[in-house]
Length: 385
Image (cartoon, rainbow, N blue to C red):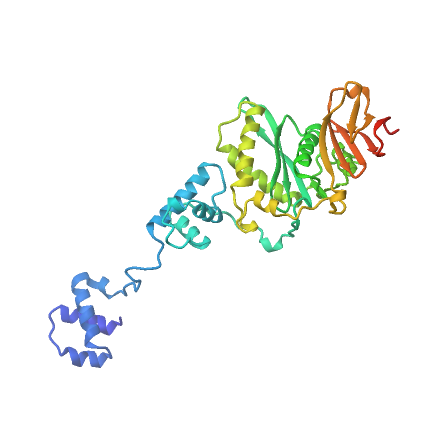
């Protein structure tokens, strides 16, 4: 729309008489264009001179309202349950609940889900973060190659602060242990690790931060956890000082646990908190799918293997972990060989880790003795220390 055409239309609508065809030819336009703007000007005034949107009235490829509502419902259910509610988790929710939406239409992409949430005002803008390409990433190639352990604090309903210890498999993100304890101390740390060893075998590497319950290496001494792991052939390693990114998988797992706990009733005591953590761990390991695991749950990825461990993978060298109780006379029996661990330990539970003929016996978090079986049944005294 130029000034000459606008003036011509205004003059005509204002009642002036002239040869429309000749005037349109003079200014270089068509009579069809003239009469189109004449109608708009008569109905809308000068607003009719502005260009109209060329957007189609309908879009056959648009996401249907039922699917958009399902995306919003998934976001609400995940968020109310205390779980991450990003586009990836919403996509998995739609796959797992085909009866809750119009599954005949193709599953919306990650970008489409984000656009739907943005239009509904459900995305909160966050400040620019450090580019991910600048991160130095690492990930174990097999389950049990590397375990990570750390703890975080949580307040009970009565105001007391307790600690939650979390043990994670680096490859599968499988939550190996999630235990509520009074404090981050060496005994509870080892009991948590010993339970995971009994259930899942022995890893090759064990990564922690430099907390005193985990490691004393940088302070000039060796922690009980490091001693016990070394005794069963596990290499204990730590992150750099003030560099939590090394244990980033555990730190990120803490965020997921904390978000879920904030949506639950505040636990009255440690037992109630442990019940909540067991419920969380069951859902996290067996229900919550992860994008970087190709849509598998941590339990599915862990079960795929292969399972790594210390030394060779030969069945003959596979460590075996058993629990036993010291007799009233202070003895334990393995393969009909009976040996003494000390009468002062009578009646106490013991953890026995065996590889071939070599045994390491733990009572509490203390390595009590190491024994080499002879293959001859009968009683033998404890190896001299």
